Image (cartoon, rainbow, N blue to C red; front, side, top):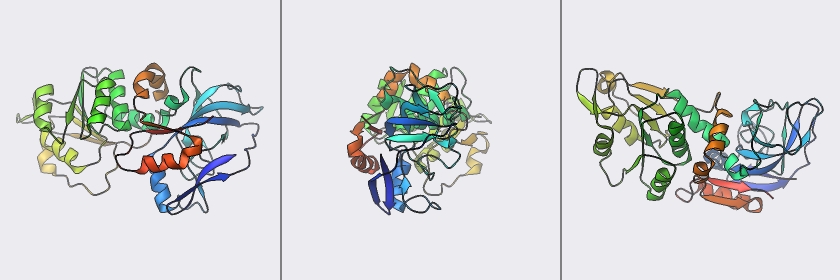
Length: 337
């Protein structure tokens, strides 16, 4: 079978490997779609994922069809369509340093268990949409970290896949008004298409003034005027986002950091003391990997809009290049015959 590997710094290749052997507690999934993540480009740049030696298999956003079921596995049958938790493999994370990656024809799922390692999805759900399950779980965890209440006013910075996934999640959870902020017009168009109440192009508009016009005003803990936003969601990872929130957050607003900030960001605690801002960090998906599956099933048309590029597996290496080129794509998905 074919598997995409990082074979050295800046080098990827499609490598022939033996087909997986299914044990009594395992299943084998024929991969039908796999998303490309920004981390895939990072692993390629550094030549793999230390401390693993040798080539590193890529791909951790899969959806597929069960083609083999071990004798001791319950609740799964050949032909089932599934999404996969890449964190569940006892040997190491799928596509993130473990011995397997999901950019492959067939993927062995060790110790397979419904609700822990896989979730069954409807057969009419397109595999390319189902392959958004893993990154959307990341977005969903960030939303959960903010403990949203019905009616909350939300501002999301960054209209990439994570930010847009968060916009859908906040709608699911009853947010009263969701604004999405970005500098790319096509991304803001997508935000409106998936149901955001308003968008702001931060390259052209005064962000704080527009938020004030849309969310009204609040105060900090001593009555000084602030913006009326309840929750800020950072999916952009740029210092200007933090500066805007620090200067504008009302009393006991919440800021969640989901994006990776590549440089240190200074914080003026004196500036935010009177706001009693709740600052939370968000990484991964401790419980959300299959919680988000139901949202994808229910909102498949919205999630479909997040996909900007589709490549057949024969062009998987080109898909990796496009996904790693800044500004070239939003969400890239590789599909299999």
